[in-house]
Length: 341
Image (cartoon, rainbow, N blue to C red):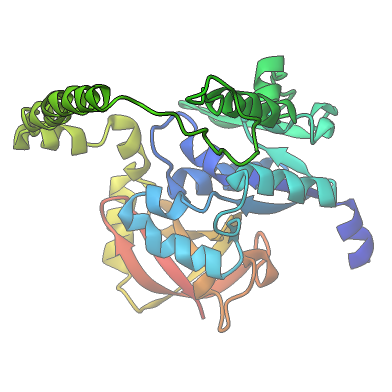
């Protein structure tokens, strides 16, 4: 029964860096989590694997890095090997090609289209965007076809080294003192030719006269570089100020009034009952009833057992009522973290 069910499940590789940066200047782990959660809610019959660039950890907000490491150690987010050619994009496409998976991304992977023509097969690419007051919308898409220039620049031919050789040959054409031209690659043995002493002295004098000019020219760039003004503290502060797009992931999760009721009814380390609502890329969303309504809490995979399971759905099922322990409260985002008891 389980084997037949898993055979019907589709595999989807999520371009984590792309989804986390959609509509933003810097990636957000929270936005990636929301995208994956919404995708699984819309397509519950899929097996999702999230792949992020090796630099992803260093580009997200510092407050999210600990959670990213937890997700990476739990196998919920995969990163390519350091120094991998093509970075995360090539890694994603190789995985998708090997397991015949769909790819959730808004990228067209133009530099890899010749290597992976299946990108143009119907249904292999899915795009997604967050729509204000609506949520994430997903739709099948076809990649924008790369131009010939893009393909030729990303796939160099053997003509380049030949041109380089021709250029090198041109530079190595040397006129010998006797007027002959040596063959490239042969030993250069110039023919001795007598030069009058007076002419030699004149050449030495001219060379010495040019030295000060060369020395002066070499100092000029250094002097110019020294005049460059350092940025003021005010300018530096403006540069470090995050744009509004980077701060939107701090939006509260629950209504202020209901979350206030939750805090008054439950203390950290107390036990409570919750219902599994949905799964995320590295945890589960848990609904907890309070006086006057219901709030959403978060149970990271690392808090669902020892050792932690690979996925939250390995130990939880949607709709299950389970006992949890309240481990922390984020008043700014109005959300609480839970651990499975």
